[in-house]
Length: 199
Image 1 (cartoon, helix red, strand yellow):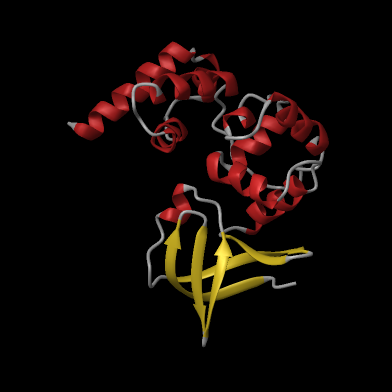
Image 2 (cartoon, one colour; image 1 turned 120 degrees about the vertical axis):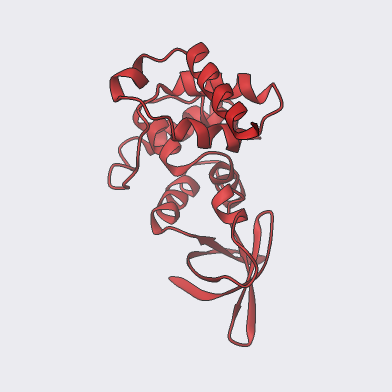
């Protein structure tokens, strides 16, 4: 197995990153989340990899963090979740959110992923129970349903979900205050923060 690759970014387009390694350009499947799309052509990069072997194809999949690769490997072991679905999940929600949703048995956050219905979301939670305990993660101590409701409400006003999540993750309140926030209060905080960025 190819453990990791160190090289220079040639291009990034959605889920595809091309890395130059010596005389070779490698095409690598990646999540299309902000931290990947914010990388620039010409950047030196070290990326943890997973080789997906199928009868008719070999796909090299890359991750900026080894913990993200571990989570990906757990996801593809769930019945009905292949590499593309797992990458779609990691493109839409963060590893921390996935681990938190499994720990709290809350399938709603997984339902935000295109193509993931209630049945699949519940199956993922069921099969991952107890398997993610050794993967470090951060929590913002906000109720998941509250986050989802607020994100969907603000998104309906035309704001990008990634922008909303960034603001939610940076909310500076005590843990007790975070836990007692209602979705209406969270919506107000997010909109206030957004308006400050445009002032």
